[in-house]
Image (cartoon, rainbow, N blue to C red; front, side):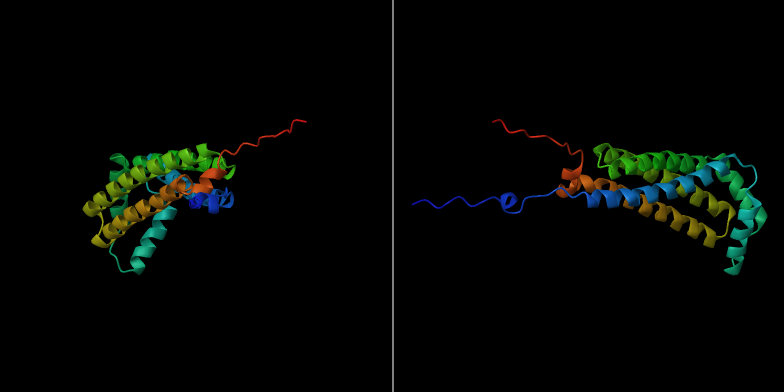
Length: 197
């Protein structure tokens, strides 16, 4: 007498489509895209500005002076001129802007459970990661020539923070492809079954 075949694990616990997971990720990606666009827009604006905006400069200098960091408006203006001329603002700004647009469109598409949203979000996050880190690192490298060590260290930390933030966005964008339940929820098609008499 032969033993009955043992059922497969997938038969015992069938994987069901999870629509909540991708939609939650989509909302987080849309939020991340708005931060990317805001940061990118600021950098692009600075890349065309001959003088660093005075209202922003006053806040930056006041913050550093509270921490007893010796920095003048002239020092920061020289730093601004250098990173504007070597393209650091443009590299980070345009990378974050273009990446942010892709992540934003991808986030809305993913919220509608379209798999193209995942691909767009991955592409946008990758562009933001590479360009964001490159531009931030260029800024940190230049700051060592014009600004005190404490400010250079902060700029280096900001470049690492940019990598961490964009890495999280990239990981979230990939997640719906890795998770089987989320993957099943994407591009679902409704089929009508008619019974023949």
